[in-house]
Amino acid sequence: MVKLVYFAWVRERVGKPEESVELPAGVATVADLIAWLRGRGEEYAYAFENAGVVRAAIDRVHAKPDAPLAGAAEIAFFPPMTGG
Image 1 (spheres, one colour):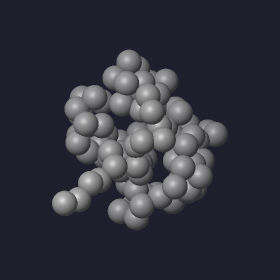
Image 2 (image 1 turned 90 degrees about the vertical axis):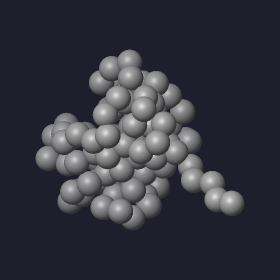
Image 3 (image 1 turned 135 degrees about the vertical axis):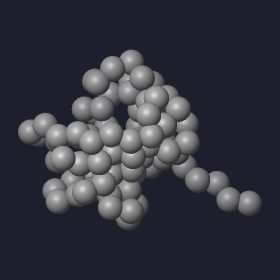
Image 4 (image 1 turned 180 degrees about the vertical axis):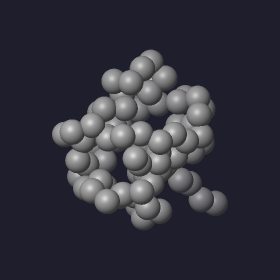
């Protein structure tokens, strides 16, 4: 099981702050996971409609779309951060 955590508008669109899922065979990278999540329902499709905008972190370390998920305990998704 992997814990998925959603922040800011990603959480609002998905409708929950977190969940635990069993990753299906073939889901090996962040990009694979986003593609799989998009197929889980309308709310996920909406949250991840522009996958290039959503950022990910694996076990609290920022990760690129091609980052492997093997051994991950937690994967977080959040919109780009702006500072000021």
